[in-house]
Image (cartoon, rainbow, N blue to C red):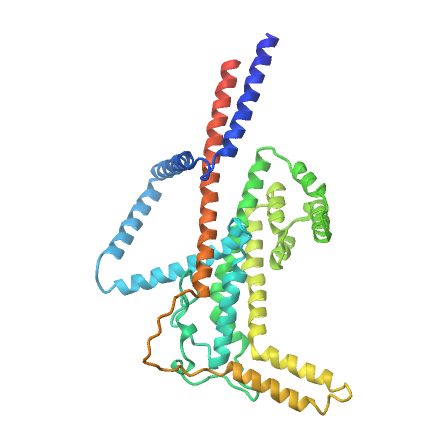
Length: 412
């Protein structure tokens, strides 16, 4: 009897090792056809579950069918409603784009990609500089006239004369109020912040599921607290993680709100701890949403506008002049230096008149934008490949678990 049990345990360990090796080798690079097959089976299984859910909830199914048929009729049929449908679709594309960028910023697209630095920050800076050059903020033809994938906003390449005379001006040049610029870029900034809040949910749900299944956080705590210190920054991050674990029981709405309102590389860890210690979902999500979509996003947006705005430059200039005036010898030189700086600023901020020419020049369209779009496309493909690999591996692992369970039942 003992030898039979030993043989059964050896078989189970052999199968476990074989299954682990199969999981490690399953990816699009080494086994593309098998990976795609398992990914398709997983998607089919998810689709069948969704259809079964709709069939079990008839009102939900009826509403989905009516909404789908209405959408198909609106898109495919001609009539006076077409332009309104196109406008709605453009607004939906605009909203989904910025929300998706926020989600991508939280999860990093598998490459540590921060979309505020790549998209939202440059968009705010370019709009502020354009508003300062033109002396007005009504540059957009519509709210969705923003930077999007393989698409630049129409206002970026327009001449200021096309918008009309400057609306804002002051004694020290064009001065557009910060609040006026903020209102023009606020919607995309808030949508991006909403995406970052949504991107923080997977760590919370994974940790919550692990907690409900009986898994504890001690192993993860040991991993973070016993990691090797490979430098000053790594040792400081380890100390912060240790402190965070020791104070994790103090997590509540206000502590989550504070952690979400400032640039915080450890917020993923906060989501994990909230899920592990049973913080209610709505408390976690609302604190994260307010912190990231309202407080943190507005801090970042106001900072970018202030850096690109003449008001901040004028304030810094006056403070520097006041400080330098106390230095002996510089007081007589300050007027010449100030005049030279002002002339350089006016030359930079001046709107260039477009030169007309009938000469056609053949150029290779190899701009920075096209190169950057290629890089982003590669990152998106990498992210898609990781999703396919993870989905196929999860489906294979489920099959392996079922196989091991059947073997145990047979042996018993």
